[in-house]
Length: 340
Image (cartoon, rainbow, N blue to C red; front, side):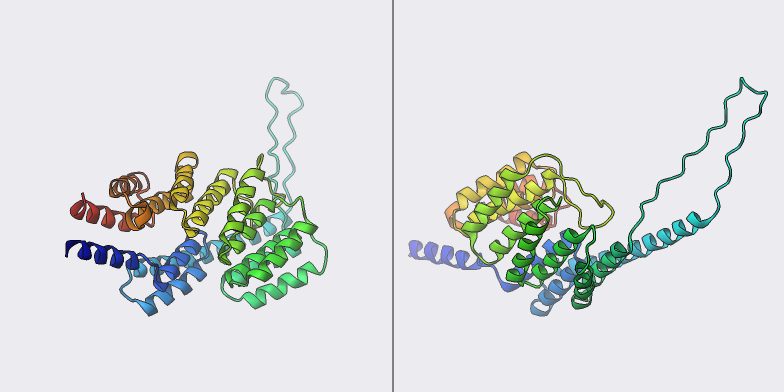
């Protein structure tokens, strides 16, 4: 009788570990929230609320997304105001530098202040930024039309325009169209400073299509190819290439995700631990720490409650601002009270 009870218990526990639609929507919303895409996060969190108004932390994340979106709009308005003020100052006549006195040879000559160098934004760059803003606000078709018009003529940011279009289609889950644009970008601009971002997004498309083996190979290839420091000809015009460590940390995390989806949980844990060992200061590190603890906690093939408590504790101590912090505290307490 006791054996039957234990079997039923673990069977129920295994079923409970299957992700619900609310969980998937919530995790996707968190991903967009962390990457500054607050409009997409708001849409996904709204869907979670429709399905489960009492879902943990959903109200908090929904309100936070609304606040972040409002803040980003204020920043953009402030930047536009400053830019206009700079243009007005440029048109004002500059005062003549003072002339030193003829018979005061022993006095230091007055220093002439060097004029501050301002970054000039070209008209096509302004149109591009406006299109990005429309896409950010959810007006994707209107933003895409502007980008298509810009691509009809040669300009120095064509690679950024193509990459922005590919990201927009990726968010719409049109992965085949995303891949077509990224391949075009690679072919026409092979030396673009965004080339590693392009390779990573191509891997993400493969991952979203659930071809985890090919995605794994792709992520490993990106890791191997990244060398030196990535630079950008237009640092003020997004998107900008990320630092190598930030990019590598995300790739390493996705390698772990591929192994997890393939059911190779031990290899997945090994890859997640590499994130903690090599990129502990990057954003992906707290995700990796939680994923390790979660595998030890909930997956029967990898279950080790002592290790689960260890990594939940590491997350709580080293990443107190993580979005996983409350769940880690709850699971750690539950395991300690019921299994250890």
